[in-house]
Every structure is written in C-alpha cells, then in structure tokens.
Length: 366
Image (cartoon, rainbow, N blue to C red):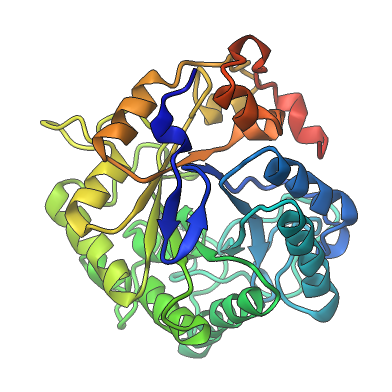
C-alpha cells in the first residue's frame, strides 16, 4: 500500500485538494484548429473520476499570433475555444475533480508542422532560439506589453469559465523561460540584465497582471525548470543564493506555488544537500512547491520520447521526501498519460496492474 502522506488532503490558497497528486501538463495535439473536442473533455474527466487531486491541462496558447507551434494544440482565446474549455471544466467538475489550465507561449520554437505556419511572427526576447542561433526578431516594447496582457486576459478567462486555478508555463525553453535564460535573453532594456532577477522581470510583470486579473484569493502557479529543450544541462541558478533571488522575484510578484520541473525528481539540485529542485525552492521561499520528473516510472521522459520503454517504479523515495516536507504536491506525467487509473491502483496497492509507459500512448487520447 502507498504511504498515507501521498493521499492526505492539501489546501492550496483555499483550493481544497483530496490528495497530493497533480496531473502534469502534457502536450497532446488533439484539438483541431486549436479547439478542444469532446474527446479532450473525456480524457480529462477520466483522470478526475480516478482520483487525480489536481489536473493541470496541456499547454494552451495565449492570444499572440505564434503562441503555439502546432495547429492542433489548443488555444485559450476566442469564443469557440473558451466555450470548448468550459465543457472540459464542466466534465471534470461533474465527477468532483479540480482543474487548472496551463497558459503557454512557445516563443522562438519553430512549428512542428510541415504544412502549417503561425499566422504571425515568432516572439522572443532577443531573436535567438538558442545561444548564438538567430531566429526571428527581438520583441518590441509594444509586443512585450501585449504578451503580458495576453497572459492576464487568459487568466481572467480561466477564472470566469470556472477553472480552479491557473498555471503559467515558465519552463523548458519556451517564451517566459527564454527571458530567464542569458543564452537567449541578451536584451539591454528593463527585460534583460546580467542577473536572474533582472531577466525575471517579464515573468514577474505577467504574474502581477495575472494577479490583478484574478484577484488576491485565486491560486496562481508557475512552472519553472533549470534544463531547456535546447540544452538539457543548463542551470540558470548555479547555487542556492541565485535560486533564492530568482524564485523570490516570482513570489514577490504573486506566485502562490512553484512547479519545479526536473528530469529526475530524485536528483539533488546542489552539492552538499539531498534536496531536489522543489525542495530547495520551498526551503528558500517558504511557498508550496510541486515536484515532477519521472515519477512512478523507471527511466526519464526524454529517453522515453526517444522510444525507451519505462517500467513502473517504486514510490518509496518520493513518499519519504514528501513526508519530510521537501515539497507539497507531486506531478505525475507519463504514468497518468498511459493509465487514467494510475492513482486508484497506487492507492489500493494494485502494483501488479500498473502499466509500463510506451511512446505509442502519444498516438491516442485515452
């Protein structure tokens, strides 16, 4: 049987969750023309009725021309798009679930489609897709302001249609993260800078505008990472002092919870301590954190995208870290993508029924 700690209730800024398990956001590309379908709603409902504590949706594009790089990634603006998301919310709430959209802008990340291009220019802090690689043009002051407004508008819409919280995607080399990274942000204005708090101003301004849009009592989460899809070994914060300055800027701007993405949750973030990324972030800021990274499976997700089969793995270390108070919530990705009943099976000790993760699961919306 799983330890009790994983299945104890938790309250995040007044949002009462039945357990500590969060469905991590995972891009699915099953929303033709950017509009979530009934199948998308059923996909999230299945996880809710199988006791996921909080669902964070796949990334969904804010109102900028190139916020998504795939025509089948859902958008979070427009009457049809928001009406479709309202159906998702209603389906999840009908079975007692809680759900938050992940608000996303891919930035300088090229389209994945051979037959489709975004209807406008790519956004990026400095016209770089990775260090030294030119791609598009740097955002003007007006474009930066419009992007900030787009996130705030999306957050307001999420609250209006009944979502229980929102998450900003500030990780993995996408737009907000491109501002964090000195390899892609070489601006010399107020949104650049030599240190992380300076480069975090874009995220901080988004958080401040989001907070104005949703009010003081609505939970606002931001997902961050050290690693980038452009470079898996990058560390923005090389020591606790730098991490404290970076995370402190986000908390001061209005973040209620930090979703700390790493490739393997069990790996220490800095030498001399066994705390992971989420553990250090909670220690330094005092705010709740979500840990995520290969939970419940052998191997890590980048290798899995390449075709490596991931087998069910023990949760003993995770539970011990949660019991110790290193973090508050646990993001589960591939295990829940493969099996909507994962939470129930873990809770009931049905470990022999847990499924291996195979990349072929990406081809379906089960």
